[in-house]
Image (cartoon, rainbow, N blue to C red):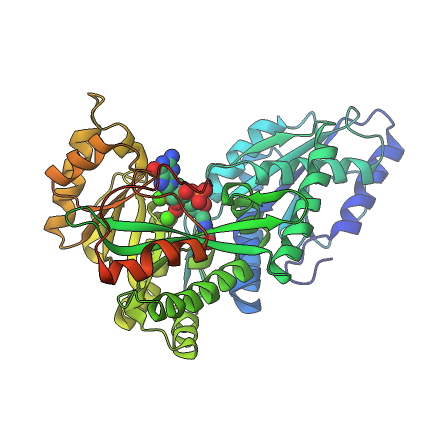
Amino acid sequence: YDSSTGLPNRAFFIESLQQVFDADGASRDRVLVLEIDALRRVGVGWGEAVTAALLRELTARLLADLALVLPRPPLQPPHAWGEAKRPLLARLGDSAFAILLSADEVCDLDLAQRLLARLRAPLTVAGVDLVVNARVGIARAPEHGHDAETLVRRAQAAALAAVAERGDEGVIRVYDPRLDNSERHRLALEARLRRAIEREELELWYQPKIDARDGSLMGAEGLVRWRDPREGLIGPDRFIPLAEETGLIVPLTEWVLDRACADLRAFAARGWQEARLSVNISAAQLDHKRLAEEIEARLARDGVAPAALELEITEQALMPRLDSVLDTLKALHELGVAIALDDFGTGYSSLGYLGRFPLDWLKIDRSFIQSLGQGGSGEAVVRAIVALAEGLRLGVVAEGIERDHQARWLLANGCHIHQGYHYARPMEAEVFARRFTGRFEAAPWSGPTGALESFST
Ligand code: C2E
Ligand code: CA
Ligand code: CA
């Protein structure tokens, strides 16, 4: 048995399944593996006590849910070895549970869907509010394996493939032979990324934020790049999701913060006295209770004024965590670190939370900027966001500005802090320093040049 949940462990699960195979070569059993995202994250950020409480809570929930949706409740440990080996719920590994079913009892997809729906109900453990998202992988005998080991391994591969899929909704994946390859590929990428962080093969590039009224430099956003010795430059969309799933986002963000602090000092020394940089903080980082303390310690250590740092958090990352992150954000705010709500307008429609939160900036998502002048509802949305920001006394930034008419429209409609290829693409720190920091003090920036001598992402 697994000591933290009291459930059967992996060995027990495999043995039970093997007995089913041995007794009936034509077994039509199904293995469902549930990968629980919160367990991956909790393990990384919160330590053992919260993890243990969450495990207990999840186990109780799963047992209760299974009892509701299955014709027979799962066997409760310790149970006798007898005729009925299933349904069975086991703890398969750190972040995974497994369910063993016979095909005749219930449809596996139907069961998976119902479990996912029930697991999504919010949960409070050890004072932390959580939304549990699970992904399910399914393997079916006899098509996917004739022995217990193989069937379980393949259900796990399917669950990991489901984890790798983007999107917040619970995903269910049935095993497919092609997964064997993609899972191996993913593990290889994870190992390479881990090494890249250790060897500091990451780079932090910067994209300026310009005050379009006078062309002055208002700040810059740090955007991470991975310079792989073989593959060359790799963009964040290819590795940030993986880093988030595997917990590598923690050391990665630490590296980014260190880099940004060092660059803040370098840029200030090169003439940008009001240097302000923003960095992106992932959802998984927000669950980390000591985030504010750690940032405070880092700023103190590096001699950086808190007001020089800004954190960008996407609306999607913030919304499901409103209650649990309020304290963290308040602490950061009191410290003087600014908070920007990134990709604003793409998340949820409830706006009530805005007033309760210590936010400083709304960053209008680039999809709205790109729709300006195209006759759709984009203009109305941008106008509304600008008015909202004004009413709440927040700053408003537009990102993804690529064209002159977009810049002009925004300026005419009350949004003057601009970021986008029209002004400059993200560029290496050294290039940014040369082009923006020194000259700014001497003569304000005088027009978009970035589109020509661009540094591609
Ligand atoms: P984001 O925070 O929304 O960053 C803005 C993205 O839009 C950047 O892509 C930037 O290069 C791109 N962009 C800027 N101006 C324009 C424009 O005019 N047109 C278009 N089409 N795109 C523009 P990038 O650098 O590939 O970053 C993608 C995402 O990766 C970021 O989206 C952010 O969510 C994530 N990311 C980047 N760096 C980090 C990091 O250090 N930590 C974390 N957690 N996430 C990061
Ligand atoms: Ca951002
Ligand atoms: Ca954004």
